[in-house]
Image (cartoon, rainbow, N blue to C red; front, side):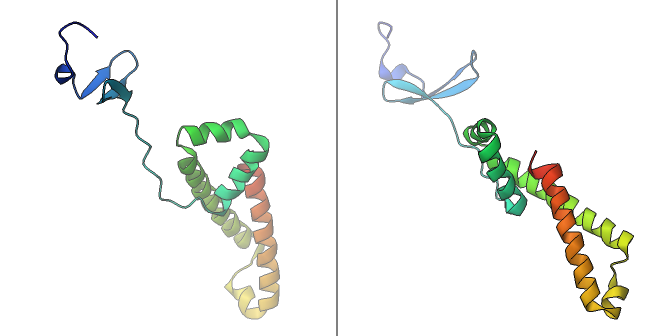
Length: 134
């Protein structure tokens, strides 16, 4: 400490241009003013949970990076929304292409359920291979 410099002369908050960080005076020391990122309130959903499990097994370095930078929840919520939108689109395209519509439902509910279950299963597999297990 420089001669003549007293605690009352220290600023309560300073900014270091060299590293771009703000520091707060705590007793005799300046500590970095680091704040946790604002938590993303969107659900991570089914697809986000599946992708996190995939990352745990196949890419723990990326998973740790996302956790440490506070970006994991946003990353998984974004992925979940994109996967959900793609999933809906695939189901719509397949039901249109295969004639699985209200008319089929009226004629034979059993055939409609069977056809729709097959479409849902194929759509889920497409999402897994395109967006989850990558």
